[in-house]
Image 1: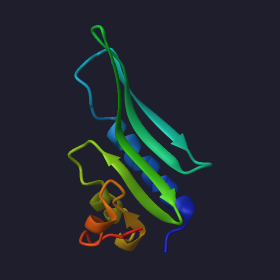
Image 2: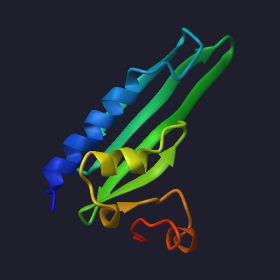
Image 3: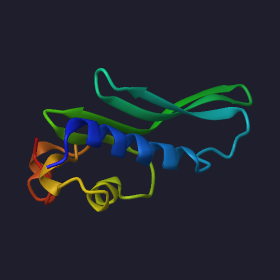
Length: 112
């Protein structure tokens, strides 16, 4: 079983990879990585201006709680859970937090 520090590294590596993609077609909107290893929160966000409109949005939000990786938000076309399994995190240690507990039961991943 992978340890917490391993999960942190795998999540950070995945978000760094995603950060390399162009999530916004607007040059004044910047993608930012936010890593809080002390509290186990990991985000990829877009922030900036599109003409006169302020843009702020969460692209990916992942938490690590109780030695499980919680995918809280995924605004990409990439199946983050599958990618984490490919990196060695067992399905029973991945929670699709963006789905209701009822829906999680049928997902093949952890419920919570």
